[in-house]
Amino acid sequence: MKPFLTLLLLLPLTACTVRLAAPEEPIVINLNVKIEHEIRVKVEKDLDNLFEQNDELF
Image 1: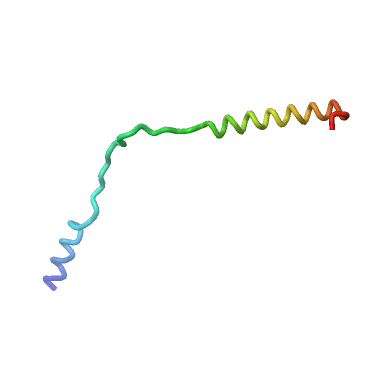
Image 2: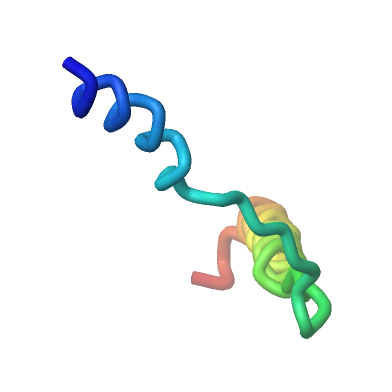
Protein backbone atom coordinates (compact mmCIF):
# COMPACT_ATOMS: atom_id res chain seq x y z
CA MET A 1 0.00 0.00 0.00
CA LYS A 2 2.85 2.37 0.81
CA PRO A 3 4.50 2.08 -2.66
CA PHE A 4 1.13 2.75 -4.28
CA LEU A 5 0.62 5.87 -2.15
CA THR A 6 4.13 7.06 -2.95
CA LEU A 7 3.47 6.54 -6.64
CA LEU A 8 0.26 8.56 -6.43
CA LEU A 9 2.05 11.41 -4.68
CA LEU A 10 4.92 11.48 -7.21
CA LEU A 11 2.72 11.20 -10.30
CA PRO A 12 1.78 14.93 -10.47
CA LEU A 13 5.47 15.85 -10.40
CA THR A 14 5.96 14.19 -13.78
CA ALA A 15 3.18 16.16 -15.47
CA CYS A 16 3.85 18.45 -18.42
CA THR A 17 4.77 22.05 -17.78
CA VAL A 18 3.23 24.95 -19.68
CA ARG A 19 5.67 27.27 -21.42
CA LEU A 20 4.66 30.59 -22.94
CA ALA A 21 7.04 32.39 -25.26
CA ALA A 22 6.64 35.28 -27.66
CA PRO A 23 7.28 34.44 -31.33
CA GLU A 24 10.60 35.55 -32.76
CA GLU A 25 9.03 36.87 -35.98
CA PRO A 26 5.91 39.03 -36.21
CA ILE A 27 2.65 37.44 -37.27
CA VAL A 28 1.78 38.25 -40.89
CA ILE A 29 -1.79 38.06 -42.16
CA ASN A 30 -2.11 38.08 -45.94
CA LEU A 31 -5.40 39.58 -47.16
CA ASN A 32 -4.61 39.63 -50.89
CA VAL A 33 -7.01 36.77 -51.60
CA LYS A 34 -10.03 38.67 -50.33
CA ILE A 35 -9.18 41.83 -52.29
CA GLU A 36 -8.68 39.86 -55.51
CA HIS A 37 -12.00 38.10 -54.98
CA GLU A 38 -13.85 41.40 -54.49
CA ILE A 39 -12.33 42.86 -57.66
CA ARG A 40 -13.23 39.76 -59.66
CA VAL A 41 -16.85 39.84 -58.45
CA LYS A 42 -17.17 43.53 -59.33
CA VAL A 43 -15.74 42.98 -62.82
CA GLU A 44 -18.06 40.03 -63.42
CA LYS A 45 -21.08 42.13 -62.40
CA ASP A 46 -19.96 44.92 -64.73
CA LEU A 47 -19.55 42.45 -67.59
CA ASP A 48 -22.98 40.95 -66.94
CA ASN A 49 -24.53 44.42 -67.06
CA LEU A 50 -22.68 45.22 -70.28
CA PHE A 51 -23.85 41.99 -71.94
CA GLU A 52 -27.44 42.65 -70.87
CA GLN A 53 -27.38 46.14 -72.37
CA ASN A 54 -25.71 45.11 -75.64
CA ASP A 55 -27.12 41.82 -76.86
CA GLU A 56 -25.19 42.09 -80.14
CA LEU A 57 -21.77 41.71 -78.51
CA PHE A 58 -21.97 37.92 -78.31
